Figure 1 (cartoon, rainbow, N blue to C red):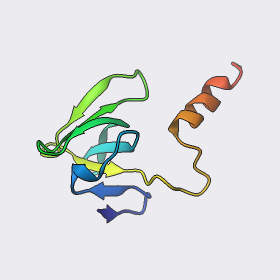
Figure 2 (figure 1 turned 120 degrees about the vertical axis):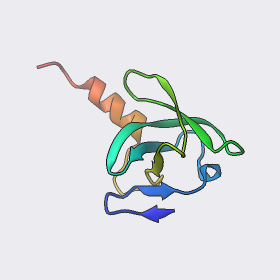
Figure 3 (figure 1 turned 90 degrees about the vertical axis):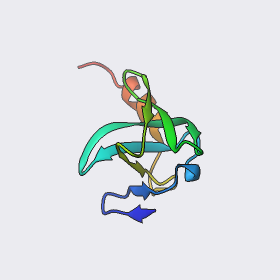
Length: 93
């Protein structure tokens, strides 16, 4: 994996991913998809993710996109589900 300044790591082997990992699919510096890893097929080199909104399941083919992993342990990181819950709990203004 290659580390970048934005704290994401480039995934060079989809077998390193686990369900629940948060990833981005990029072409160059443009993010096309992001979400939580649902399942993988390491023999085929593909990953299925669930996007946070609207919750669609998508396939990521590493021949089309580079895959970037958000590290599991970041200081002050409450995780995607807790962040979404906190966001949804805010009163409307």
